[in-house]
Length: 233
Image 1: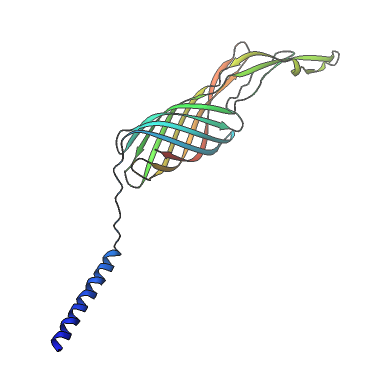
Image 2 (image 1 turned 90 degrees about the vertical axis):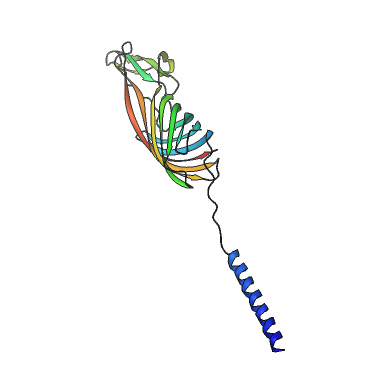
């Protein structure tokens, strides 16, 4: 009888120990490794928000890029940019009894550019640097001419007749574009990434000086700072 009791007790202890091992092994969590980066064509959509010396600026961009390796992506981009106080600035000398003025500054432009991006690793979270260079395409601005109307010739008093002003010239507003940004890329899957970044924009503003018939075109640069986020798929 004692032997039977000892055998049953030994079996119960063995079953209890095995159950404990099963429960303990169930608590072990195995972290899955990220799959390799999928190479090939990628679509990048990003949004930016920032400021510059000419006011608020923001943009929405699309980049068609090719992932050549785990580290390198290159492609072409296009977007829509808005800046609060307009892109071009023009200063035109007036003539006696005539005044020239730009009808309206462009507040919007379409950047068209080449884009490159370097990822420092293929980890789930990885820093990267991106560079874009190209053109800001904007509609031409109009130069309008207003004649001075005298109401008192003796005292040379009067006003500029803007109601009957005429367009005498159209000027280019297209300028260069450069963008440098650094960010942190989060790999969601093998094919989809989410990135957060900040950067600097540099663009040229066409400026015109001198008399209307002999304008001197110059390019003055402006800098903006911004933050952004993008999704790659």
